[in-house]
Length: 163
Image (cartoon, rainbow, N blue to C red; front, side):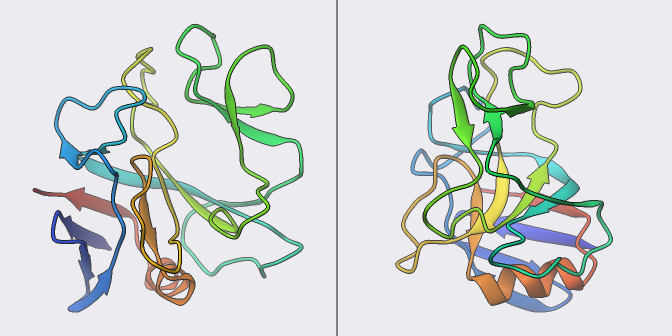
């Protein structure tokens, strides 16, 4: 199932519309590492990660994997592991996926800059849980926890990000 995300902060799929938080840098076709932008693109959902100590395994058609406290995602364009999952700690910059807050309790990994990985084009574009105030993300698409669970269970496979 395909969802449409717009700069108005909405995600629509199967005739249902949900509020989303987007990148603080807006929506950009020329996405770059650190710009805080959500890429203007069609993004496939490649897998779902979750915190097994806080969440049950989400219902989804995508492959699912439980997170561990050492899971991270490399955001260092100088490293060969750039924009790939890593085990922490690493020599370089990486984002911890096991967080104290709830934002990454469920993560939909989107296929931005995955094949091939181009250093500096942007990393870790996820579908994840929004802050309670729907504050902006670093480029990800974020929803309320129940809404994220719902769209995954609806069979989400692709997100089209539009301006």
